[in-house]
Length: 278
Image (cartoon, rainbow, N blue to C red):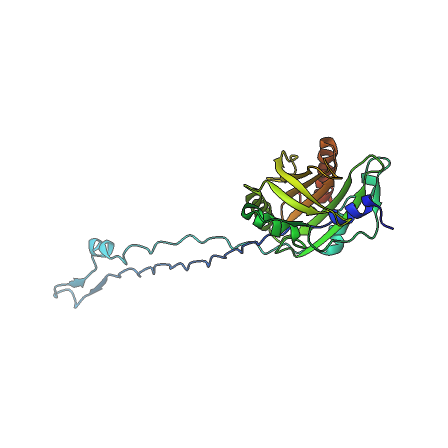
């Protein structure tokens, strides 16, 4: 029988999604090169010593005044948009946290795949967009993904980590921006817990760790009922073309901070992102 903690971990692997726009590629403009005229040549003819010499020449003034007109200005070309970065699922899986990356007493959960089914519901129009994103299987536009479940032990949090290859930095950033916009004005959702219980949960934006460029975090807190005080924190961070996302059940701020920064460092190293992602 699945324990409540195990069921929570399975539910934690549900991910968010959002539509991502495309990019336009500029067409280079053509350039023209003006032609260069050939110079004039002087000639002279003579009919003997008693004959007046008649010469036909092209004056320097006439030559210098000859012109083909101003050169056609060259239109600057725009660089072509970069092709989407393609990544293999195995490479993403190799960039996820493993047992050696975790604190003592923590473990990796086996066989906990991505969820399915409805995570949340609402009748509040201000929460409709966020509700749709939380119930989706993953970010729209994701090319490939990999995820892992993490158990913090008897007193530790339950965590899921997911990586989505979005193709471009702009696409990964757009996912986070859309989630931030969808959460604006939403204050409460009804969340389905793994045992079938539905809990009313307050929503609040919380300070995100300095991970990636423009990370975003939000928290759902249960009020009343058997799970009063239960916290679910979602973190989303664009790391160039890769979207790093976490779901934390009842995690302390230092656990959220430490785990997300360790994950960022590993993604940068394993996927060879290079340089800073912040």
